[in-house]
Image (tube, rainbow over all chains, first blue to last red; front, side, top):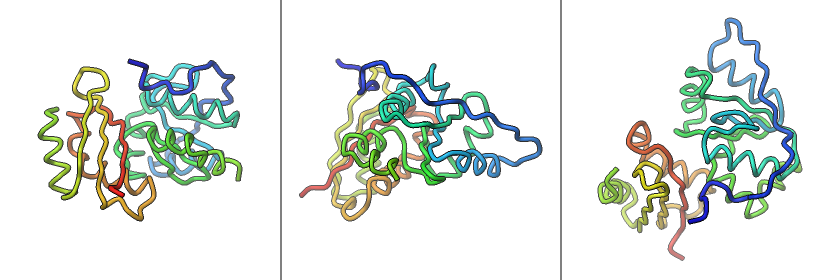
Length: 126
Length: 75
């Protein structure tokens, strides 16, 4: 059975970097707002771009890398407040979660379908 | 998670739904889920998936670790 998590296959160069945060005294919602407005493409994931810790996160990373765009990530495994807070923020119960221009786009399935339909390419070209 | 129970839960909420469940990893908590229902009509992909995720909200807290979701309409 082919790996259901890896739809891209080939190795790519990654332009994805973990988000450097200074969060003294900020509540979870403010921290999240700062993250998603810090850069056009922001991914809440498990792990970091070079070492995703879950198949679905790895899938989205592979898609973002194949689109050759800059993006920032946050490792929800490193912070329970964000891991829980992001689910309430977007009203979406799972990780990964992709944000473009501060707007929640979807999780792995939606990003995969948008990649296959070409929709994500047009969205990111704006 | 018991697939029949999952199917019934979805059908309670999406009356006309056809539900196909597959076990992605053999552990019963990484599920492939294909749902056909006309309730998805006229909704964008995120809205369709959100409908399903809301139905599975409780199960996703512990009994289901991950869902690979495909939504379709009958026509």
